[in-house]
Length: 254
Ligand code: PEP
Image 1 (cartoon, rainbow, N blue to C red):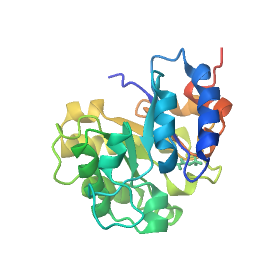
Image 2: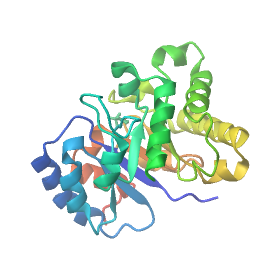
Image 3: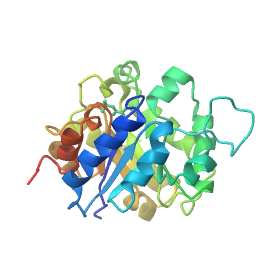
Image 4: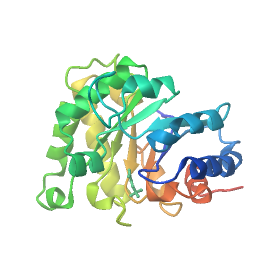
């Protein structure tokens, strides 16, 4: 089954509002004719509202990088799913390894965030992935299984109908070390098999699984050629509009 690719940019803690708007003005024309795949940009929270207005009417969707699980309350410094939906966010990246490792997010917190995002009709992008230590200890598949099963515990296939999973080996994020297309394909095929066991085959077949970890214009073609890789979650290389446009276009700018 052919799944519609999604190329998603995660700007992390980069770009002021003005820098974000300048990027979008430069980026939109570079991808305006792309109609066979989805494109998403995830700026910082404070740039979301301005970016949404700037992206209006374009083929680029708006994403957020995180959210809290409650709609409101005494949670100083947090941003709620209700607030994200209100400014027109479509996708929310959840369980990114930086959130898990630097900010102590657990599988249970990620599960609650998925529930919150679904409650507001946004699309969760669930990030999973092993550390170098876990890979070297032969625990990669066990880690992926735990993160996927715990993160998606209690949901039905219907509730998760638009779910996106991102396989992001922690050792490949921001390090310049990409997983080889074979390593990524092996993990993606495993995740798809798990989704089929947890839900059903139709669900597994239609769910998009992105690869993330030092994706660049030079390696996107090899990754996208693998049967279970349905797109990319791009950090560093999404910060430059020309570079990200080349990734979106799978290396071709004509
Ligand atoms: C990411 O942060 O999701 C990521 C994959 O980063 P990078 O592309 O910089 O490795």
